[in-house]
Amino acid sequence: MSAPDLLMPKPMLAQTVEALDQAFTVHKLWLADDPDAVLARIADRVRFLAAGGHAHVDEALIAALPKLEIIANFGVGYDSVDAAAAARHGVVVTNTPEVLNEDVADLAMALLLATIREVPQADRFLRQGKWLSENYPLTPATLRGRMLGIVGLGRIGKAIARRAEAFGLKIAYYGRRRQADVAYAYHSSVKALAEAVDTLMIIVPGGAETRHLVDAEVLKALGPDGVLINVARGSVVDEGALIEALRNRTILAAGLDVFADEPQVPEALVALDNAVLLPHVGSATIHTRRAMGQLVVDNLVSWRDGKGPLTPVSETPWPREKA
Image 1 (cartoon, rainbow, N blue to C red):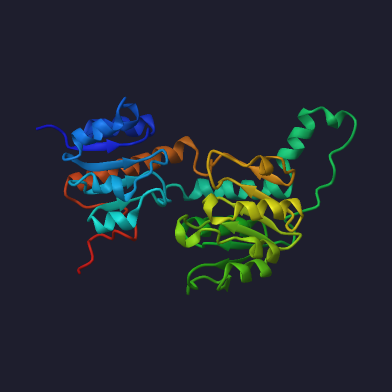
Image 2 (image 1 turned 90 degrees about the vertical axis):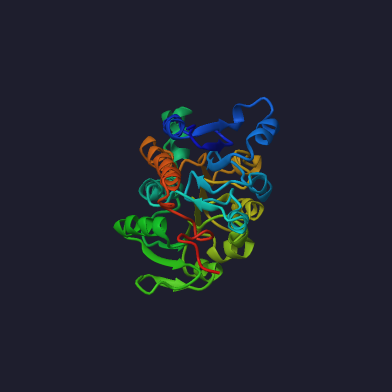
């Protein structure tokens, strides 16, 4: 009996692909000369889909695969997969939570420190030979006395909070609801949180519900000593409003690992000397990416073996809710 058919629209880690090749008949769509022809040929056989490399899985693709049962997304964020459409078609969606918490939290704190203490700017200063004739200017900001507002106190948000506490930062948070077992100060809106803190850390999922959650009003509320750090999704922040806020010194600085139209980054943002920019590397360690890839494989194999998904997303709970 041949292995069940699995569609892979975009490339994934070699180790992940190798493991899937051993368990499934993998159709690597990005290698096809005519992807539409390949889809037409295999559509009635595909039961599994591995979504990596920011593969866009919309309702049209889901509907074109009538036998599709499960979509395993590479990443804790799954805004590139239309999970609501998957639910309507009876398809389970999984993601890769937990395994990337610590590396993302490390990167978030590293980005905060780099932004506050102007680490990339000081590095450029030295490399350009300027230290030979002058000292680097004193940085206007410090972590001392700052209060960190975390937008999204989930698994990663709490891992960031633990690290921030070790640096002596006071912490407040915003979420859809107050968490009974959390002692940090809670604010019922992002604007209210921004008014109460001087450092805003964004770590919420992307998607329509959080689009431009941080807008011009929030940035104004954060204030001239304010620092914005975004390790979530670029869509959460109004990028145009942020550029203006940085230009006009409405806020002091920003550290960004994510952007609205990745990998395109506005030249206006690149030109700013009070922005630290990273190419979406929050979970980008070999250790974590291998663990994420393995969880993709484990979800698909568990489903193949009739054991159900390991990490279903909220839109497609398992066991399925009764109608």
